[in-house]
Length: 261
Image 1 (cartoon, rainbow, N blue to C red):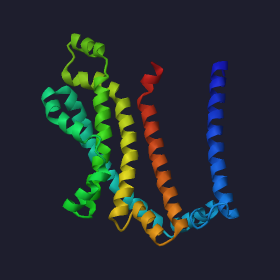
Image 2: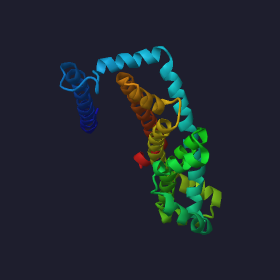
Image 3: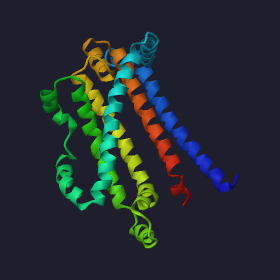
Image 4: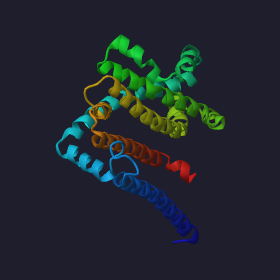
């Protein structure tokens, strides 16, 4: 191992240690303060009580039902956003006519909160699955669309000119030059969209659902089952972390060429 590699490994290990120790301290505070009465255990039960309740709803199968329903809702809205936003982002940069038609719509709605539109969606579509799908789709589509547009615009014009000078076809230009250069932007957009879709999912399930993690959090709060509420919140945070970690690993595997360049 070289000195440079050893130093890099040491710094990486030190960073992991710092992150781990901070989390460990927070978890210790969560356990000790409610147990000693420093924090009211009715509002924040000890971590051990929350984990015990979490294990209970895992064993009895209740949690898995809510997770499956929430993931199905989130995945359908997110997948629809990917199918629509990614091609549209490329087309808006590629075609002036498409850009002229869609750009005013993008500029008008890109910063409009999906939660602000939720009452309108409920009024039109009711409290069924369609309303939840639309809210998740709306929330996930915009950051992904903007990321794709920014990625295509960031492609170095020199690469495009060089490809054209070699009489590369339009299809080859797209797959060999534009798409590889845009992948990091697309993956960043996917991470942002995935995070926001989970937030929209919880809000949608809290306001109009009889199942799902958002419903479970809202329902347990109303029933004063606070330990169960925190167990559901921990589950939701864990799912978000796993999704983000998966997308980060996907980004690393698809952008090896960028790091080695």
